[in-house]
Amino acid sequence: MTPADKRTDEHRTEQHRGPALMRGDQIKSGTTDQRLLDSRGPSDWVHTDPWRVMRIQSEFVEGFGLLAELPAAVSVFGSARTPRDHPDYAAGMAIGAALAKAGFAVITGGGPGAMEAANRGASEAGGVSVGLGIELPFEQGLNDWVDLGVNFRYFFARKTMFVKYAQAFVIMPGGFGTLDEMFEALTLVQTNKVTRFPVILYGTKYWQGLLDWIRNSMLAEGKVGEADLELLTVTDDVDEIVARVVASAGARSEQAAAEGRAVAEASRAAVHDGE
Image 1 (cartoon, helix red, strand yellow):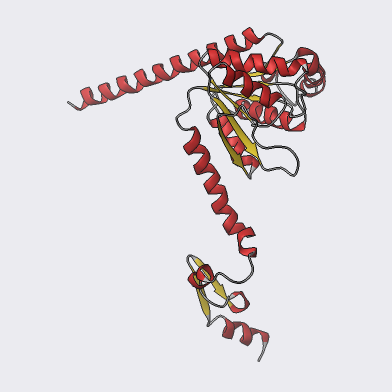
Image 2 (image 1 turned 90 degrees about the horizontal axis):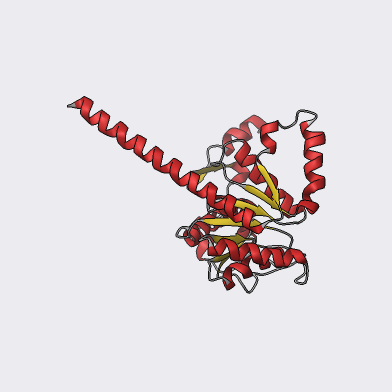
């Protein structure tokens, strides 16, 4: 039998698994139900990509379900390595408390350090303290001041929750993870993937070198525009952070109300024209 004859012969046999079609050597023995009900055999199936899709879906469902009824919220990022006796920890507590008193839930990565500080400040001030943890080979578990928390396997699912339920981002001094979250927020605002909201850096001394590099290298070489620099605010004043968040939330509410009135007016005009 020639290779062509063999291929034609193989393709006479087909196996369907839902929408998937297998032929030739790709055909597996047994049925999906059989493999489901058979308690014995290898467990590699739980690590396959199709199964991961279900896990990813479940993380979005769990996250959306947990956070759907949150009040207006602010995501606070910062280093897991900030000691409790460091001034940044005290600042994180002050920021969390001030945001809670202003009526905002506080969302962090749920870990120790600056995240714990913000959660602690919000919780002790009587606010809603949220932690979105992540499975890592080191650190951490949700800190003791998380009142509402969920752990994620996948960074991208977790990041969606930070963005979807936030009215603003506050960035405490931190490392690679903090920078990742900061630049993602900036990119989403810059490209209009999200409604513009404040991205506020706390700690002028810590962030000044980065801001200088953005202006003197990125802006100077045309990699960003002057308007892009206005997406960032840097401050050492907790009251200024809260004032900017409150002002932005108020502007968004006014914009939403105006859009609602415009839609209602358009609907009334359409009804009137049809009469």
